[in-house]
Length: 612
Ligand code: XIL
Image (cartoon, rainbow, N blue to C red; front, side, top):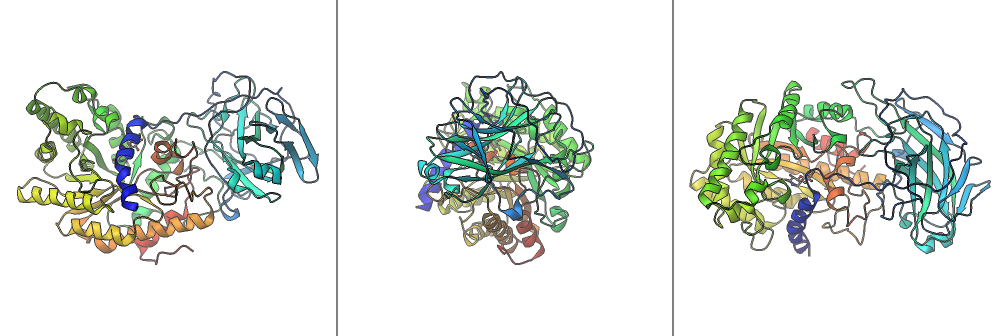
């Protein structure tokens, strides 16, 4: 079964990538409240945060009734040891009263009632809930709000879920609608902690001019009663300047890793966003910079060095954005792994190539021109040390073969895989010293694909086609494939005398092609899950160290900085019902360490892999 599931991964991943478009940008639903703005402010601000900057609120026009129709993303409560802490020096806690200041929200709500338990509302329909206000001036971007809630048995059995949310008042009503607490989290009559991180791609809460209302609403076809027993907001303190250390948001977890890269004798890399994702742009986001400069000595551009970004129309090479990124890296002693010279994925193949109507010979020349120009350009910068020359040219089927009709390159080369060797030759001709990789996914677990790849490189070596190494993307599951399987695949490459690089590592907690999804979907990133992921990261890095001799280690790169910016939640947005439940990276969405970081470090330090 596993092989069948993963075989489908090929086409679906490919389709998904195509659908993702250039930036994987997120579409956040925006809703508005129909209730008259109230006025009672939050109580007991325990400490005050640094003054905020003044980006204006979203200009989204108000609509008449609350709540988006789509099911938003999850930011389910961590267990207490991972939860927001009021004592963190970098965070400030705002306690919200549950004895006054609340009102019913949504058309047709029946108001709220107070009791010794807290504030309750009747969940008589979709989008009905309760809200309270936090008075301006308050900076809520990147804040985390936490509620302890209890639902009645009627609510539990209605199958409804809850959505914590925040909305800017004063006319705009733009909101944070990505949070979610699914029905499966609740037990009738028991307390459940739900959290929501106010972190929108467009930073609509990065302002202090307006009051904000914070609340929770029922979703689905709810009945019964929901009681909010406590509510609080942990504010994030802003970095004092753009190059200085950013604040750590509220989190109790520290991996105690000063610098991951200092623990390794080979490159430790990370994929970063640039102009393809303005919120997480490594050149403008101080938190991204701080994190990357601390832990990594290699970067891969998540998108902006792909073909259509560098040569959108024939002969029109646009290096400005990529140059800024490469130059920034150089100023921080960070090397670049170039990604990717040739990749069939539709969104990044320039139209002039897709629509090529000339001869195959001329197409191959045009392909070589792209490679020669790009490789030459970055040879001059000298911190670009390696390239993914060709990405994902093989199929997942059994037997695996070269992609055919779904690859522009195969088709326009005259229905031939000759473009692959031509690409490697052109790259080598342009730069004699840069390392040249063939890069693919599933080659760590699909024997048929691994063997086809080995057959290809054996042929290359026999015919002196230049190739230095194999990039294992390694978008893997929490429990699959096993470390033994991964090691066996890498050994095949080592046996060819080629370098092994893990190029795009992420360990998905949920992923539609992992065995646990959707039947055994993991709804909350609990401590148990976080520690399982820690062990898993450790085992993968250990498998690499045990299998690949030092002279063949091209390094290990993770595909993204924090969970907030993982490509997986975008790729599987539909299957995930818009929930952000892959949690695959080393840092949480507030730039805090995850146990996964400790796991990675454990392997580098020779500490036994453990889920403790
Ligand atoms: C992904 C990017 O991370 C997304 O932002 C984009 O929308 C799609 O491409 N394998 C690769 C990478 O080789 O280039 C892909 O990057 C992830 C899968």
